[in-house]
Amino acid sequence: MSWGDLTPELLHSSVWADGLVESAGIPIYDMPLVSVGGGLGSFTLLDVLRIRGVAASAMRVLSTSDSPWQTWEYLTRVSQLPAHERIRSDSGARPDNIWGFPSYAVQEAWQERSIGPLFQVLTEPIGRDFYSPRAALVLRGVQREADRIGYWEMLAKGQVRMVRKRLGGGYFTVLTPPAGSGPTKRVALRSRYVHLAVGYPGLKFLDDLQEFRQRKGERYRVVNAYEPHEHVYDQLSKRPGVVVVRGAGIVASRVLQRLMDDRERYGLQTQIVHLFRTFVTGAHGPHAFMRRKGGDGWAYQAFTMPKSAFGGQLKAQFRKAPPERRARLAALVAGTTTPKLARWQEQMHRARQGSWYHPVHAVVERIDQTPDGRLVTHTRSVSSAPMQYVSDFIIDCTGLEADMPEHRVLADLLQHGGARPNKAGRLQVGPSFEVLGAENGDGRLYASGAATAGNHFLAVDSFLGMQTAALDIADDLARRGFCKGLGPVRSVSQWLRWAANRRPA
Image 1 (cartoon, rainbow, N blue to C red):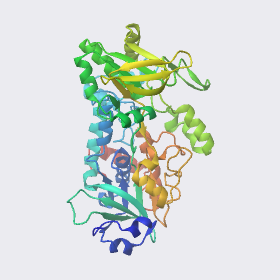
Image 2: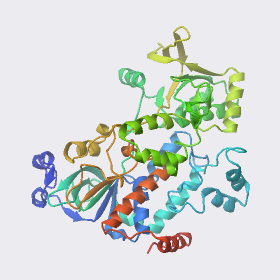
Image 3: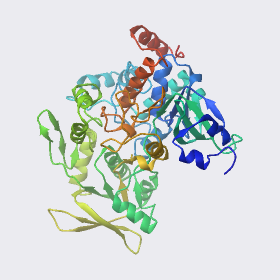
Image 4: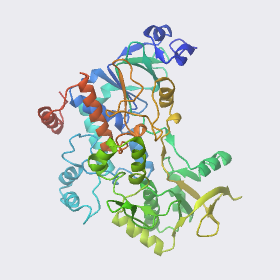
C-alpha cells in the first residue's frame, strides 16, 4: 500500500476519524459542500446555491468531466440528437435559468426574428406538435450560466472513490486526482454536506444481446444506441443492408428517423426490421383521465412524463402516496414512450407503404451468426410461427443502466454509508432529497437524478426534475443556515443579474 492511499483499516471502517485518514498520509481539505458527479445534476444545484448567495469558494464539484454538459452532449449526439436537432424537453425547462423565463421558445423567436416558435407554443398540442428546443440552444445556455456562476472555479477533476461518514459529523469524500497532479494517490475532502448526482452507471443491453456480444466478442455489428455507432450508417451508405432495431422509446424513434433520412436523402436500399416486445395498437390506460395515445407499436407521450408530474396534480398524488401506490402510479405514467411528431409519422407511413420498414411484434429467443458474419435473430410470437431475421447490424435502443450495485460510489454507500434502496431499487430519499439512513450528526447527504427514482417525485431524470431537487435541497440547506432563502425580492434581483449576465451576489 503506497503512502497517501487507502489502507485496509479505512476500507473496512464505515466511520472515519480524522486521525485515521491522516495516518494513511491522505491530505485532507475542508470544503463545506461537495457535489459528486459533475453533470447537469451537479450544475443545477450549484447554480441554485450561487443564486442563493453561497460563495464559489464554499463548494466543489468532483468530476471526471471537463464540463457539466459533456456527458449529456455525448449521449444526445450518439443517440441521433446532434446539436441542430430538437430534444424532448419543454420550452420552460431551462437548466440554465431556474425561473424558466424567457423560455426557449421566446429566446429562439428573438434570435431568429421569427414568430414561429411563439405560435407553436400558443397552439400546442392541438394545432402543432409540442415545441422543444434544439440541443445547441440548451448547450449555449448552460455554458453561459457556467461562466456566470464561476463553475470552473468550483470544478476539481478526478475520480471519486467513496463517501464515508466522519466521526463527529459530516463526511469524507475520497478523490483520486489525475495521475501526476499531486504527491499522493488520493485526497480527502472533509465536508458537512455531500450531494450525489452520478447519473447512470453504464449501458444497458438486453440479455440475449449481452450474451451474444460476450460469446462472440462482437462489438461492430451489435451496438447500443448510446455508444458510438456512426460506422453503421456509414456502411449502409456504401452498400445495401438490413438493420434490426430493438426498442420503442425516443431513442428508437430517433435511430429510425436517421436510417430513414439517409435512405431518402441518398437513395439507399436499407431494409429495417423493427422488433417490438410490446406492441401498442391504440390509446391505452385504466380510465379516460389517465389515457395515453398509441398505435403502430408505439406508446405516444410528448415528454418523459405527463406535464402534471412536474408540477401539477400527479406530482401532488405521487408525493402523498405510500411506496406501493407510487410503484403502481409510476408503472402507469412512465414506461417507454416517444413523441408523436407529424413529420416522423409521415416518414413512417411512407416506409410501411414502400415495404422497406417491417414492424414485428415478437420476443427474441437468441442471436446467431452466419459463416459470413451476418446476424440471425430468432424470434417467437403468440400470433405467428417462429421467425428468423438475417441482418447486417442490430441496434439496441432499450436504454441506460441505473442499477446501484453497478456504481462504485453508490454500492459503497449501501454497504458502509447507511443508505438503503427503495421499492424501485434506487436510493431512498426524504422530502428534501436527503438520503435516508446516511445522516451523520449535523451533516446531510443529498442525491438527485436517476439514482433517486421511485421516491416522492416522479420526474427526477429530467431538466425540471433536477431543478426541483436542487430547489428542495437548497430550501433544506437554507433552514440549516448554509444559504439564503429565495423570496420575491431576492428572486427578482437575481433574475435581473442573470439577464444582464452578471455574477450572482
